[in-house]
Image (cartoon, rainbow, N blue to C red):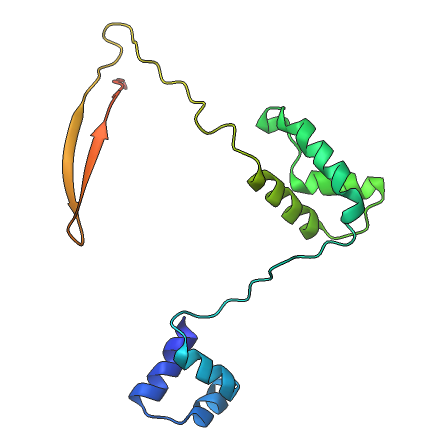
Length: 158
């Protein structure tokens, strides 16, 4: 974003030519024109990441990930450990391919941990208090939000 700002400032405020800006900032004239038209700095995003060497090992990796998804989090292997296991199986590709595959696999599965928290609704006498407390808060821009707090647990420290 700062490059776009520099280009726009030099063109619109200092009235420099596109060629002069391109020469000083070591950019092409087409890039300077693109930055003058753009609202945000363009970012390169690869649409499809090829993984030709991982292709033969995807089934093995998927099997391992499915088996380990039932284990507690501390007992699961990291992407680095999975990569080392694949290397023992004969994988010659790069670690980042394995890492991207693991990230995609985890992102495609519904997160079982979300929504499984246990919140007790009954407490021993004197152990907790429950408040139904609402407060309206006006945030910048005039947006009103209502905050609600329930099940406030009391604890004392020494």
